[in-house]
Length: 280
Image (cartoon, rainbow, N blue to C red; front, top):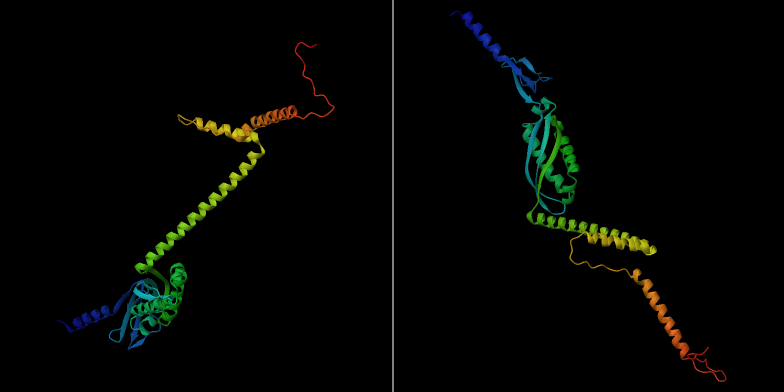
């Protein structure tokens, strides 16, 4: 075979091996004789002069980092197990390659230590109620520590807070007692409002006896609609008042007549004579 053809084939194979493809979500960091280029290679077809140049591909997509479960002692001496998730991406591929050996592992370690530190400064009630504030604080601290590596931490979320079994039972009892307290308060408030309304209604009915009688008749109408064999009807005292007054008047008249018949005789005054039968 002609040596020129062999050289040409080898040249083509070398040229093809120097061609690299950078995807849209990647950037290429090129080293020329060990010195990094000023700008990373953009997506598309690029040429790397081997063996004098070497290119490392960096993924610039957002990476989801699952922070392992951490045992944390809160400020009020409660041991909890907490895990979290962090979202970050590479903003500067050159720093991510040159400033840190493995930026994913390093970011994971920073997230774990920061999670233990921040939650250890918080009380349990604050941890459970102010989750959003804690997430924001974690994001700011981790992002500040990873900024020299060209890493941008966008979101940090506390996923789950596992409490001890005894504490969960105590919190359940506390929540149940709180619900019973609210139920009793609402019931007492309802009783107070009902008694107030009933008192106002009683005052109105007292000022108008006819309204009381109409209410009594309405009650009888409501009772009559039920299929009852025996009906006990309460009689208002106001209905018996005229009869009681008339009876009292009769008793007073009889008492007056009896007192007049027993009046003692006065000297020099003849007692009244009773009329005789047949007298004109």
